[in-house]
Length: 326
Image (cartoon, rainbow, N blue to C red; front, side, top):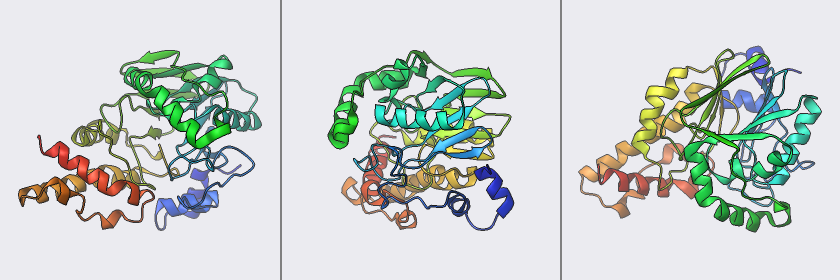
């Protein structure tokens, strides 16, 4: 099987990396496509990014019944001595569907599941994995976030997923960590890193130093507009990026949402977007503009991103509210 990275090497670099990965996987990401893998609850069939590292790319749209809540990336690493999964899935039906795909690739058992943050799409499948006897780990802040919001996240998922919600439950991780969690398993060294404040509490990135690949989680976006939550401190996210994430100098990036790409692409649509938004909102404030004016700052250069219509104005308003008290 040729990996996505291998396809890119064969094609050569011409045009955007987004285009090359779309060619490799045979489809472009679009929030207008309800489901790209109808024989499975997964939105897309997992693809092998580099040897041994797979990712099932989620929809770049909000969670719906049609995509079963699979709107983030569910990744797994076949190490030679067991499989490590990144993200439990938004429901048991997704966790099982991912497990079925893993079984089609390898006879190795799943030995660890990592929750990339405290959001429902990373955690609500925990119960399935725990019932299989698999340990689940998360950053302590992510575990606290899921403890606080898990039942509301479960109810929201049950509303859109209806019967697909099945027996999904709020299941906390088996173990938590604060700064990092490192394991050497099979042919992989795996560093699970809390790099600092970013998109949401307890965001982590999974770093494979020998392969120069990072499963970035919600540290990095590029095909859909990133959401700024009330708890997202944009200045801190930029600092974490500049001081920690950029230093990884990864060759391959599997973001939290969207197809695998490289650092230049996620930098452009994450760090550079956040800096741009602070710049235009700052200019508005210098001119005496108010919160109601912030919703209309020019973000047209990002209009092509999925979820732009849902998030752009909200993002600008939240940046204004943060900068007002700096």
